[in-house]
Length: 202
Image (cartoon, rainbow, N blue to C red; front, side, top):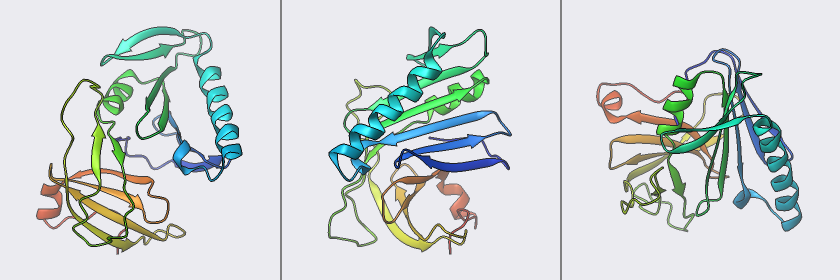
């Protein structure tokens, strides 16, 4: 999912496995939970209930409307939109909260769900990562395939190693090498061809 460029974004974890990205510059908050990353049934239940409680608190008082065939809620009192996105196959659960409908629409349009198969083959041409689905659940497209996969050390303090995956559609995505979580949005291959590089990689 593409998010706005921001100089004021914080990344925190709550309830052990719920990630909160808070962008005060653009007034956007993203709350993300994936039950596949829980290490026990107890953890899954705790985190699932916490996420559901957060979701319902934001939806409370909102009126349903549709953006790009996705149901969102708009609260006329707070002026905030909330989009509740998810994918049963990848176990992704995403909340997007913002007052900016244009930003919300763009973010919804760029959501891609991925299944990562952590096989024992760690070659740079690992083709086990594929797009699982797009927003159109009726699409028969299996998504772009992996062209290459390289491991880098993240120069930003405290982030360790990450895998950069290049797809057949010309985009790059970055994943934490231990958890497999998506940590970077897509970049067009033209940037790479013209001598550009993804931020923070060494």
